[in-house]
Amino acid sequence: MAERPSRDFPFNPSDGHRYTAAGVPVCVHPEKVGMSPGKYATEGTMPVAELRLPDDITDLDPYLHDLMHSAAPGVLEQLIDQAVQQIPRAFPEVDVVQALRRALG
Image (tube, rainbow, N blue to C red):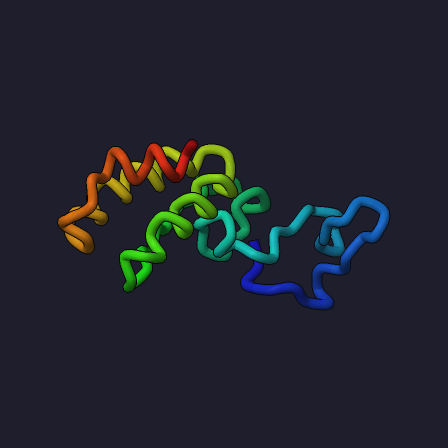
């Protein structure tokens, strides 16, 4: 995963993906899958998700929906665990189970 698109990871118009010079696929929008940039496949490390709750409660449902539906394989469980811990602290009035049901529905 890279922080953003760059010439180091040329776009292949035939399949719509970006690759390193060695032909390794590169994700250039890690925030869309809830991950920080890293060479997970290249270095054989496990991806780590990072939930960043919005400041405004009105943005919570759309944020959770978009994040959960675009989560990378193996990351969804991490995001759910973080949501269960963080939402009550940030938004005590929110029913976490209902918010996650809306996000995953």
